[in-house]
Amino acid sequence: MLTILGQSARYCDGIARRGFLKIGGFAMGSVAPATLASLMRAEAATPGGNARKGKAIINIFLGGGPPHQDMWEIKTEAPREIRGEFSPIDTAVPGIQIGECFPQLAAIMDKLVVVRSVVGCEGAHDGFQCLTGWNRRNVESIGGRPAVGSVLAKLYGQHDPGIPASVALAEKTSHVPWSEPGPAGFLGAAYQPFRPNGKGMEDLTLNSISLDRLEDRKTLLARLDHLKRAADSRGTMNGMDAFTQAAFGVLTSSKLADALDISKEPAEVRERYGDGKPYKYQYDGAPTCNEQILMARRLVEAGVRSVTLSYGRWDSHGQNFDLVRDHGRKLDQAVSALVLDLEQRGMLQDVTILVWGEFGRTPRINDGAGRDHWPQVSCALMAGGGMRTGQAIGATNRLGEYAVSRPVHVQEIIGTAYHNLGIDVMNTTISDPTGRPQFLVDIREPMKELV
Image (tube, rainbow, N blue to C red):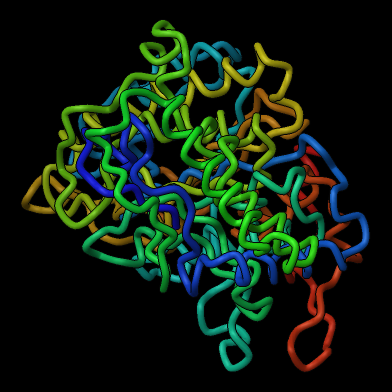
């Protein structure tokens, strides 16, 4: 990572608003140019390394398990101890209703898909399955399954040497699996997602420069330019191959910093997304950081293929309804803003949005006004990617216990995302360390209702 000595004001994801205290950093391994270079060599060796420009995915993980029956499928006919406190509201699509905490999403239902019957959840408090489609035990002996972002880095590479293929925005949570960045698995460390606040084994430091001495962003960029010139004067750049030079460019380019800098957005755009504050019910999970969702849009616009983030802490064993009122309304604001923002920029057809968690919540409300773990069925919100939207897919029974129509496996959702990204999931394989070709998912047909 690139570190500038000193202090600065920070916003919800921990990135400094002025100057960006830390830029870059891979979660597993050094961020020195040599390590970044290995990533770029691997990507350059992949056929079609810069193909599919514009195709991207934003995967918003609702860590803790969102309550399906309080969001997208209100159980109006269930008894009180199951039904809960929320009422359904009409949406822009006749015949589709969703929970009252999501009025802005209801207004753009024609651009969305709600899946009410997600099955195949493992039942662990972990983001792994939502990022890969697999459980952690699968092919664990050879490194485990790679996340979508790492697969995209392998198959397509980078749009631009200064922009990583995959970025993980999730800040570290006390319950670590809720901030899972998306593993590279058996693809190896070269395909790990880029973490803007990741801690690598080494830092590149702008010696003797503190944030207090940086009057503005122009000074920061000038120092970066000086760093590159200094390397050239010592013959460092001449001694590097093209890939190492490109890797050095990631660390010293302003492109990633610019994409992460939401202060460059007009005030009305930032207000549309909101900031998600005050943060409530966070405990050992992620904050409801709406600014990260705006940042995700800026990243895909800059050329990042995959952005992952963790939004809120939905493990509502107690105060479930108060939590959903808080988290739901903030999520409603940010995701509706994201969808409309991408549409206005002509990007919505190319960017797939997933919003989901690791499992659902119990039908019966417990004595603490909460809902407990329920892996039997869960839910998802989808948008963009060229899908046929304006749909509610699947349903659970009267009590919200299990899917009674169109159960949708977790792998079908991941497979649909791959399809939207231009990957033929029926035939595409990647080789594991033993040389054996591995399909990206077992359930290889995308959801027929959407494609």
